[in-house]
Length: 449
Image (tube, rainbow, N blue to C red; front, side):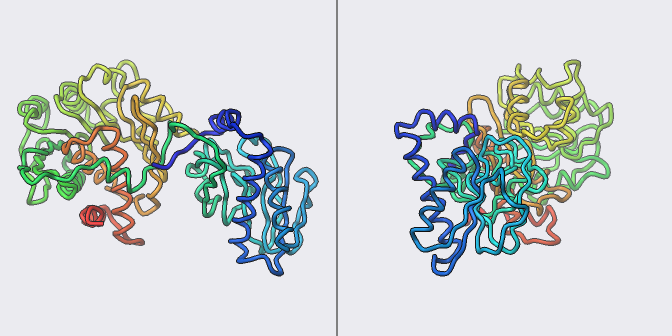
């Protein structure tokens, strides 16, 4: 678990610290100086320019400047308000102009070929949302304190912070309400299959695919099998499903198929519904009824989310009435269908608002995926990248999460672990030319690792 704190939470943490402010600033400045020396490769013959603002961020920079001078580095300090438009030749620029609370406009100077080290956040980057003002300096390294901030991993943040270092300056972040998922979390959440397991122990029901969209069904089922579902039974309404040979193809009618799906759903441990089902008017009531009356946890993806948006309230608030968990997996457009508007810059707040409305687990897809759930920390999955921006990878994710639910993983953790496994599989599968099927094939390697 990697804790993440918002700027507002950080201010409260600072205020509750038992040490005086000048002690904390001294520790922070020392951490910045150490990072600068590592980036410079030593002190001998090196020159550094420090841009220092009026607040604590600037104070951290001034302490770092003093520490570097003690080591023999040639240091110039520029006041942020009177900084020239161009920094003269130097090896490193330390951006300590403004910290996490900055909301104004600041024109960063040209830094030439010098490397840039940012203190807490690159000035101009919103520490809550990751939205960057024009001209924000791109850092080679960012040193932040106590915990990661949301803006480091959301929006423009990953393109601007460079290598992120979290310095321990003795602050207690308590029990974080936001965390970044890492390998140890997934190891803790996903159980090993017991020796006495049988195929029905973690069986998964899938309703996906339609004429012209059979690939979605194939990807969901394949991903679920590769994630360890003992049995996958797949239905594509009105047609024979395009299923992996290991899956069971069960025919259901082209319309009014909810009864057929619900009849023996109690034999399964989870249901995935929606990918590639289409948006025909006759499909919507069968999806809604299957979700609402399901006696097992449900993952709703793709066209299933479209169907849930067709209700009198405009949002799927009726899902609160379900007695078993529901996981919604929207991308920005599907989020807009469910709520009436796209997420906006504060993706964490957006996901949490939808959770408050529907009482479900919400996995908001993006370069950094946000997983929010009732009564659980909001989890951020940061190991994915542009390789997953290709058709069908969302179907793969739905299958992974469905299999984890069928294995008994709690819904919030199934969604977060599923997103992490999904991203890690893409990382292992290749780079240019990666397709969704490659991600499916790489899933067992993630578990072996």
